[in-house]
Image 1 (cartoon, rainbow, N blue to C red):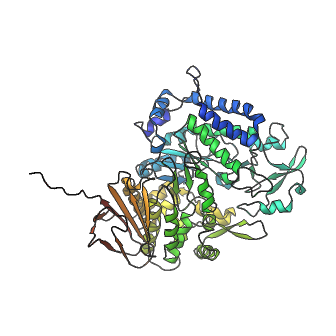
Image 2 (cartoon, one colour):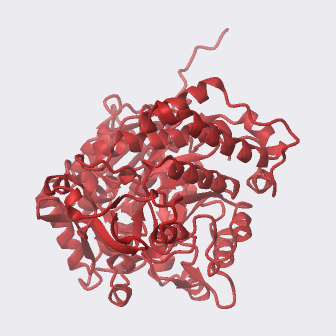
Length: 628
């Protein structure tokens, strides 16, 4: 958190009830104009006044929940200070770690507060709401905590030690949700909450071919309603019913929920599947300008009433489309998932050649002082490959997929709209994406490879995130895939708390070796100003076998040269100080303590197999003659 307020004090930022005795929120005229313009672009001028009146009411009610402490803190808040080098996000389900006789959220709080405080400063709690499928992403009730996990108070308790990131699963709701059940009952209030067709002939085959989706299932699902069968738009599955944002009442409901999450402790809100928010026949139904307008509207609302809360968009799409969700860096998402990073890192380690990774990383641009990338390698879903569609060839993507299958993983496919399918996601743990447990390679080598790959996400410009199973080096859970008939289950195994602690304490286990190694890397990272998310980044193309990032602190006096050997063989690394933009001649490896010095303008090193080197240098002061 920024300012002088401790994280623990943030739990006192909202009252249990709104206080309408204090002055009400005064929405700045400039913000009102921006909001009205977006509402007009979405719904036409005729309805703007009515929609804006209700939207401003929601904002004023939320504002009345804010305590004087929060109002005072916000006066000091600077959006450009939102993220720092200390930001590292732990991604986890609320029940990924369990203990008999204890609610999972309490168990998670104990684990993270005892072992991970000071390593991670933010916890991304994957959907913790009542749900019917897709491990939380078919939400039955947006405003309740699944009682099998715990309570809102349990979540608020985590804010004593961590910032929190919630999921805004706003593209769809569960078929078991009250909203959809009221639609089936043909309640007039809800009949337009979803995109509905009476017959398939209402969508022409040509329009169907245009629709881009991450699934091979039918986009229309049939449901029996009070007034007969209806076809309903379902981008992901028949249990996940797309909301119809063409209905302004849907938008207003979602804004209300968005502000509820802020009041309940969210510092970052992940907009899940936001690519598909708006459906328009005759288009691809992805990345539509209306979807971008809705995200910008969310940003406008939060900038007025909760400026400390950031939006992050989850868009597993080609990289050039993905970064569009930054807009100009000031008016849309503050963070975007760097979806191209995982498959490119995987490609580098599979081939022993970091050239593609280097070339892509060199193309990344500074966004703005208020926005940056979210760098991750694995997640609760898998390793998406859509982002590298125009970076790697189809043959190279197929090679990644083949290696994953050889290592015990699975492939999810998407419908291309022309009767063909292509890989969409690699379903595998990050350990098995890199390692084959049956090939006889020494475990020590596998651990070194694993940690080297993870180090890359820690040094790149942006905020790093680590999935809990990635922190532990978990293996594929094939039994869960077979039992649940869901390939994503391969990386979602629930863990016993006491058994996990035993593994973490046993130095002979890969769980211990991976976790302690990764924690050590993070502890070094969060101490260095050169790893600030927006610190200058320069990518050096030194050799195919190494990946090199040069990060320079904003004050310009410190620099870190981060070198990763992506091969199983030693690599000779060398660069001329001037040509590499290096600011020093003498360097010290933060990870080993060893010192190195450039000779005759050249810094040369030998990088051992899968070695990670973080060389820190300080700008040397020019010597001046002493006054006599």
